[in-house]
Amino acid sequence: MKGSQDARFYIAPTPRGYSCDHAEAAIDLAAGYGLILDEWQAQVVRAWLRTTTTGRWCAGTWGVSVPRQNGKNGSLEAVELYLLVQLGLKILHTSHLLTSARKAFKRLLHFFGQKVNDPNARFPELNAMVIEIRKTNGQEAIVLDNGGIIELGARTGGAGRGSSFDVLVVDEAQEYEEDEQEALKPTISAAPSGDPVTIFMGTPPKDLSERGEPFVRVRNNAVTGKNKRAAWVEHSAKGDVDKMTEAELAEFVRDLRNAADANPALGIRISLETIQDELNEFSPRSYARERLNMWPTPTEVGKAAFKYWLDRKIKDPDGEWPMAAIGVDMNPEQTKVSIGVAVFSDVGVHLELAVDAPFDVEGTSALVAWIWERTKRRVPVVIDAYSPARDILEVPLKKRNVSVYILNANEYTQACAMIRRGVDVEKSVTHFGQQHLDESVKHTVQDPIKGRPGSFKWNKDSLEADLAPTVAVTCAHYGSQKFARRRTERSERTPRGAIVA
Image 1 (cartoon, rainbow, N blue to C red):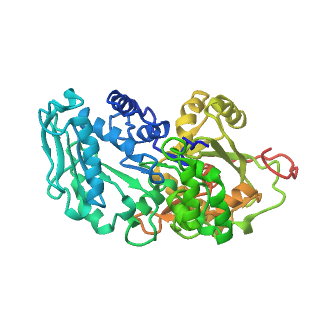
Image 2 (tube, rainbow, N blue to C red; image 1 turned 90 degrees about the vertical axis):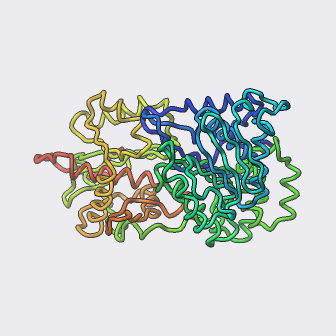
Image 3 (cartoon, rainbow, N blue to C red; image 1 turned 30 degrees about the vertical axis):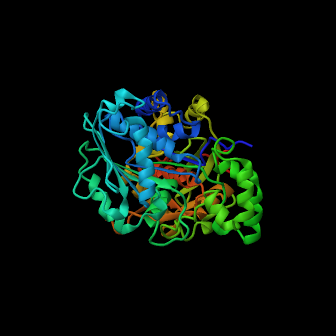
């Protein structure tokens, strides 16, 4: 049995024109010095080292979570090597334990040698760049002639105080505490490069407490989509451990396919026999955390999106109600598309989910044709600016002269407020009671906007929830109110079961 090389969560910003050139160069550089990355490790590098058209990092928060002994440090070593040698950046590498920091230091010495002008250095060209190697316990550092520097130490030792860095590495992040974050975060606030990054690496904390709370928050914000500038890669078993009974969890952990999903190094660095031994030694919950990398359910970020959504269901929408707008959204992986349709009804706006189906980028032309056939030039198509659908659809739709509207952050916030008001206050929104849409709405919550009392955007209350259908109808509703023109003449009504076939 081999571990899956595909991450359960592979989240990385994809702005238009983004580049992975640094990522590919880092992978090649590491290979040139004998560090051959597994495919999953290379994918971590590709998620992290993405740049915009202006040359800045696409994400300011980089993270990876994978069970122990899978080799997550391989990705970090390749990245640190590249940032030091090619970009000359300043890195502060912190660990919970001093022994862990020293291990990371020794791995880097493999590349740079044991001292300046080391005649036994494996790679003389790298050693030639070294102008200082500090081996003082707790203050290890490597300084290069291109300005690159890496300092390594335990967080309890006050690492990095009084210095400025471009990159902060938080290893063993499950032990990271708020006071440590308060002390360390300022070390990159004035990054010499002007483009600071924090890297988080670790596994789920044993308990939800102050220890590990920053890491849990970072992970929650990434997988729920709250942080749009996060690059997060996670290999874990699919399932919600908090919602399983003891009997269900015991059965779940016995299924070795879940171990294969969570451990990409199974069959490479980790043997099946090791997995089976751990099954017999750990409790189901310990095994789920340590070997399956299963996290606690993200805490609810706000109250339910709507109070009266189910009350707004109708059985017989009128087939002659004119189409007002279409809203489109996709999941972060761009493997599923959701299309919401808004039509003008007698009481206001009727919403339906026209499409909620698997998607492949090779089918983009067919999707564009489907939308064009139903909208032509008169019906607006609305997409959130941060939706993965924008990258795929905006340009080809505009080439077909479709009226495409991209909502900025303020407009999207307004869209969320408007549909909530239409459902709960004005009673002007109806829907058809579709299972996928109702299920999405059920798990949609109001995520308050910091510094703007009363304002919110949508988020989800569960890792497994699908927010895209709610976002799609939200965009469609907004389009009907802001961009659509209501026709005054109507043909004779013909009742039917749904507006869109």
